[in-house]
Structure formats: structure tokens, C-alpha cells
Length: 180
Image (cartoon, rainbow, N blue to C red; front, side, top):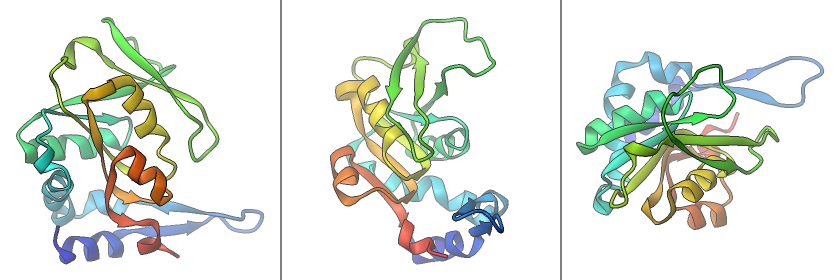
């Protein structure tokens, strides 16, 4: 990954202050999706974090993962599989495999699932997402995928170092790179 891409990611990112009565700020990543240079560089840069591990498929959780995952899959020359959240208002009319996701950064518990027919026993799966704050989604997908799980490539890795090491989370930026 080039320093140019890191600089672009930092400059296109914003923290939004919710105003009085709120003791936190909200991340605004919309500038990442607006800049064609970032879109052009994200797939190869994230893919390079795990290229030597030879993934055969990319799996990404909805929603933002559905944007980033295909960019990485294309850069690696592999396929893409969506990981859906349980309870969404859509029917998936085929067998799914599900895993519980531990409490995430908002305190929510989720379930993620993938279409069973799209993940084979010999696959080497790279999880891709935009941000890892607690590692909860990577942990849930690792449980779902078992030994097929290689790790997670993210734009921002904000996890404690021991969590990143345990779950093989690799990022282009850290949370400190985006401190307000």
C-alpha cells in the first residue's frame, strides 16, 4: 500500500460531533466512497495484506463490506460471498450457515450467515470489511468458517493488539491514524 492511499483515506475521513448531550463523535467514511482514487486503490491495498496466504474467496458482512469486499475479490482474482445479518427484511430461499457474533462496539449481538453452497471445504476465506473496532464480526465469521478462515483485511483496525493478533486482523490504518 502506498502512503498516498493512506493520506487520501485520512483526508477524506471526518468525525461528526453530534452536539450537546453526546459524549462521542460519529465516523463519516462517505468521502472514501466518493473519491475514485481511493476506490481504485482499496482493492489492491487490502488484497496485498493477505495475498501471500492465497485466499480463494472473500467474505464480507453487510453493509459496508458489500462495497469493499468485491473490490478486494477483484484485485485478488477470486470470488465474493455476502455475509448477511439475521433478521433483515429479506428472504434468502436457500440453506445458510450461521454464527453468533459476540457483542459489537454498539453492544449489539448479531448473527451472520452465508449461503452454504458458496463456501467449499477447500476454500481459503479472507474476511474483508471497512472497520474493526472490537473484532466481533471477524470472531463470528471465524467461528462460522472454521479452518477456512485466513484472517480479516480492514481499512481501519482499531482493535486491541491482542485481538488483532488472535483474529489475524490487518488494516491499512489504525484508529490513532484518524484521531479527531
